[in-house]
Amino acid sequence: MEKLILNFEVTGCPNKCRHCYCSELKSNRELIDIEEVISISKQFRDYLDIDIDVYLLQEQTFHPSFIDMIKRLEEEGFTNRNGKGILISNGIGIAHNSELAKSLSEFFSRVKFTLFGTEENHDSFVNRKGHFDEIIKASKLCKEYGVTVIWQIMLTRGNANDVEKLVEYASTEGVINFVTADFYYSGEVLKDDSFVPIEDDLLATNFEVYEKENSLFIPEYQALSSIDDLKKQEISKAAIDNLYIDSNFDIYPLSNINADFKLGNVKSDIDSVLEMLKDQNGLPPLVKRRMEYDLEELVINNIDVNSKEMHTAQTLFEKLVNIEMNK
Ligand code: SF4
Image (cartoon, protein in one colour):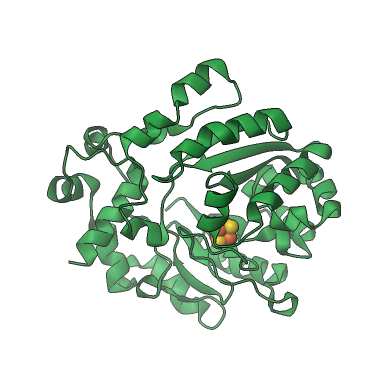
């Protein structure tokens, strides 16, 4: 392991997106403190003797000290993608705090929001009415204060027809600079085949037309491959160099944030967690087992090569590991 990424859930979230493991929104007095984040991250850095990147996630813009947190991380040398120009956010904190929108430009040149369709589909996916409007509001505020806004559309089997409307909307409203597509599926979604788009959905979005005729749409689906292509790809063993620390300080491999994969608690027992990471033989059995799979074997054993499901290598790997482990 050359570098470790620690992702801290800093507040929880009022939405309940189907692909997300995030906790419920905490009250202000329960929020994670940046000094705790720094102290934990330093212990990882010192004990493992590697570089640590700290990312503040879900949902950093709700945190009343968000901007100060970014400054502290920079001071302590935890290279942070948030501090390097792009903020990935659900926009809610920004929509309800124009002062924050104003401060963002000091630290971020771009902000990226994810849409799961037009208003009805989007609000239904995130399980909270009004979130679509909050993203619109946040987008306008960011633009007003000079931060480039990127909309990322997560394509699902149910929203392909919304893509054209979203691109049009983005264009007429002038709130965004460009739109990208995203195909990252995780959590409950991986257990639900009816959610994952198939080739026909991709074609229905007219990606190529947008690419040629509308510079707003810059598809990022190069990462997306057919099953045949995936077979040729080398995928890293399910690494534990990207860890997720929830607001209770429980720590998990980023892609398996559920009880079966918990490595421990970094507040009550950081020593055991660090020891376990240094000596990977001490990892919980399920985590070790997950690290042993390789994509090619999983594809050969489980995938109908004629399937038209669209996945990135990583999400296909997650799906197949889930199938194997539940056998
Ligand atoms: S908005 Fe973001 S943090 Fe909130 S539930 Fe959805 S994906 Fe998770």
